[in-house]
Length: 342
Ligand code: NAD
Ligand code: MG
Image 1 (cartoon, rainbow, N blue to C red):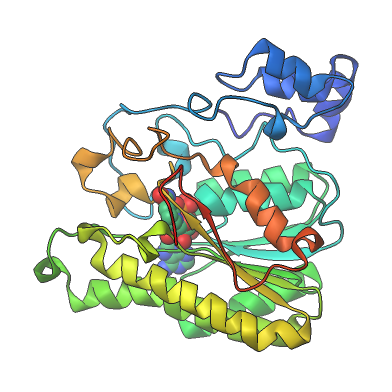
Image 2: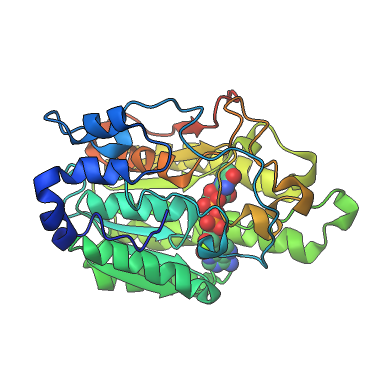
C-alpha cells in the first residue's frame, strides 16, 4: 500500500487508459479478487472502492507486527502501512470547487478524507503537527496529483491563537471555506485515573475539544449556506474503555457539540455532523493510544475481527460534506465494524 503510487495521477491514468485505470487500481489492491478487479474496470466502471468484496477479508487482520512510535506517530512507519484510499478512491465530482480544511489531515482518517475530497474536486488545506511533515508531504503530493490546490498548515491546535491563524491561512490559501473537518486528536492510554496527570487531561481536552470550539468559532464567519462541518467522535463516546478515561469523555463532548451546533446553524443552511469510528489502523494507536501489548491484536474485538482501514471512511466524509446528505444534520455516523452505537 504505497501512498506514493501514482496510479491515480493524471499522467499515469493516461498510460493505463487502454487497460482501464479502475481495473489496474483495483488489481493493485491487496486481497482483491480478479473478478472484483474486472468488475471495477468493466463497462459499468464501478470505482475500486465500490467493488463488491467480502468486508471480513478485505483488509489485514491481527496478528500485526509489534510496533511502537512516539506520539503522534507516522503512518509511513506503520507495518502494514494503513490504506487511506491512495490507490482505490475514485471521485465522481461530488465536491467540485469546494474548499476544505481538515485537521489531522496528514495521516489516518483525516488523510483518507483529504484524499477523497481532492478526488471529488475540492481544494484542501491540512493541519498537522510539525513533526508529521513527512506524512503531510505525501498528502500534499496526492492532492496536487489531482490538479487541486493543497495548503499545508503545520501547528499545534492546543493554542487558541494558532487555531485562529489556521483558519485565516486556510481561507487565504484556498480563497474561502466550505467544509471544515475537526479531526485532530490525542489519545494516551492509562490504566488508572491515578496515572492521568492534570497535564495529560488538559492536553487531551485542548486537542480534542477546545480546538474544535476555537476552530469552529473562527471558521463560522467564513461559512456560507451549503457549508458543512464534520467532527470526528468515536465509539468511545458511548462505550468508553477503562484505559481511555479522558479521551472517551472528549469524544462524548464532540457528540454533544455536534448536536448543539447543528441546531445553532440549521437556519443558516449549514449542516454539522459527526463520525464515530470503531478501531481503525492509524498512527494514533501504536503511539500510545493503546497499551503496547494490544497492538498485535488491535481490532480483533470488532465483529469483523479486524480494524478498519482509513480508506473505509473516505466515502463517509464525502457523503457528509457533499450536498448528497442535504437532509442530514446533528447526526452521528457510526463505522465500528459491527459494534452497535445508540
Ligand atoms: P492519526 O494519528 O492519523 O490522526 C490524528 C491526528 O491528530 C494526527 O495526525 C495529528 O496531526 C493530529 N494532532 C494530534 N495532536 C495535535 C495537536 N496538538 N495539534 C495539531 N494536530 C494534532 O489517527 P486517527 O485515528 O486517524 O485519528 C483521527 C480521528 O479519528 C481522531 O479524532 C480520533 O480520535 C478518531 N478516532 C480514531 C479511532 C481509531 O481507532 N484510530 C477510533 C475512533 C475515533
Ligand atoms: Mg499524523
